[in-house]
Image (cartoon, rainbow, N blue to C red):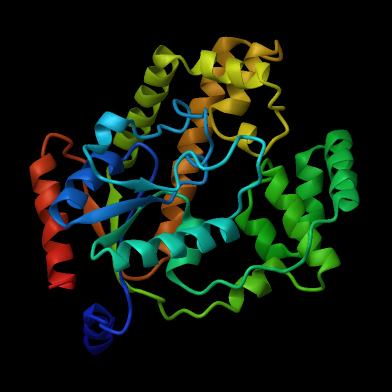
Length: 325
C-alpha cells in the first residue's frame, strides 16, 4: 500500500468524533480484553452484537455478566424483547446516538462485537433501503420456502440479485426474503443500495481486530458450547418457548436457539442438535472473519497464545495510544 495514503488514514482527524472499535469472531476473547482496554482509555462500550440486544437471551449469546463489566458502562444490551424487530438500520441510528452522548461526556466510545454489517454500517455511511415491509409478499416467500426448501428460495434471490445471494447463507431465510423484497419490489438491488455508501469513515476511527489459529478458535468454540449447555442453555431456550416466543422469530433463529429448540420439540436428538450447533458456529466464525478481512485499516492482533493476556493488552494499547495521541 502507498505509504502516504496509509499515513494519511492513520493521522488524527480532529474534525470527527473519535471511535474505538474491536472486532473478531465469536469465542476469540473480545470481552475480557475490551473491559481492560475500556478501563485504561476511559471508554464506554457499545455492543456491536445483533443478538445481545434481546432480553432473556443470555447464555446462548454469551452476553457479558454484570460482574464481568467491572464498572464499565455497556450500551445496546437487553434493549428489545425477543419478539421485537431489530435491524442494522436500528443499530446504526441508536449507536450513533450513544456515540454522541458518550463523546459529550468526555469519554471514548468503544464498539465491541462481531456483527460485521452492523459495525461497518456504523463506521461508514451506509444507505439502507427505504422499501417498506410487504407482509403478503413475505408470507408468500415463507410458504414457498416451507414447500420447496431454503435452497430454492435462495435460488430465487440468486436470479434477482446475485450479489446479495453470494453474501447470504441459504438458511438465513429472513434476510434472504428481505433481499428479495428489495430487489423485486423496490426496483433496486440490495447490493446497489449498499454500494451507495460513502467509503470515507464518519469517525476518527481506531479499528482493532482479534484473530487466532483457526483450529484453536474452533476448539474454543466447541468448549464454549459445552459450557453453555452446562450453564443451562436448554433451560433458557425452554423458558423462551414457554413464554410464547415462536421459533420463527428472527431472535429464535439465532445460533444455539434454533438447534436446541428443535431438540426440545422432538425434531432431533440432543447429540444431533449439539453437533449441528458446533458445526454452524464454526461456519459462522469463518464468515465473520471473511467479512472483517475486507474492511480496510483494521489492526489485527493474533491472540493464539491465550496465556499472554498482558502481551495482547499491551499490543492493543500501543495501537490505541498511537492513534489517539
